Amino acid sequence: MKIKVFENYDELSRFAAEVVKETINSIENPVLGLATGSSPVGMYEHLVRMHKNNEVDFSNIISINLDEYVGLDGSHDQSYRYFMDHHLFDHVNIDKSKTFVPNGLAADLEAECVAYDQRIRDLGYTDLQVLGIGPNGHIGFNEPDEKLTTRTHVADLLDSTVDANARFFESRDDVPKQALSMGLEAIMGARKIILIASGQNKAQAIKALEDEYITTQVPATLLKVHPDVLVLVDKEAASLLNR
Ligand code: F6R
Image (cartoon, rainbow, N blue to C red; front, side, top):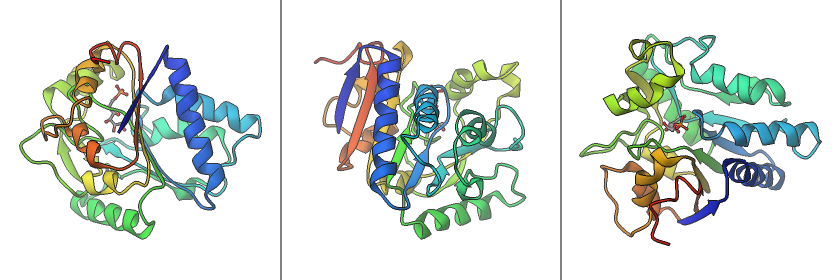
């Protein structure tokens, strides 16, 4: 795992977009694992700009997202499907039928999870997985716990995560308390991973990535055993690092 510190969020986002661009331009049918939330917004903005400058072509891409809230329809402005359409898919030449986000409205959520994992295996896992990180160290919605789940599952969001995400909703009560989330197998199956963290509230979680220890209480520490992980942080998120 390498940690790279940037002067500001825009530089970080530009670099992240370059990594995505290189992946897209160097692989015939790239499979991208994508994240939502505030962390990758700048990266998506740069990718849209690069696309408009003819630097990157999305026509051969398959994308598969990390997670989706249970109970939100794709047209709900806080659903992750809506986020992806709004921040990326509607602005680039991607074939939307090749963009996958878990269906948080599936009648049988368990079957949806099994099918999602099967799809990831059939795709041969991702060439590049983009991750954010929760203030509590979660990746996807793999929340700190005694045990973590390998497969795609229905995750109960911790109160701290509901609090952190309440800023996107009208009130805290509106935040879904469950999400469908890829498990550790799909995330760790990626050939390359970039994790984006910006802001002081991520500093504690980023500090846990600095030493050689792994703990399920900070799920992102599991990434330390993956052979190709690049952690991209701004100065605020890096503020507790020793280096
Ligand atoms: C989103 C996801 C989450 C977020 C994390 C950080 O698809 O999987 O793990 O990356 O909660 O969220 P932000 O970026 O909003 O601080």
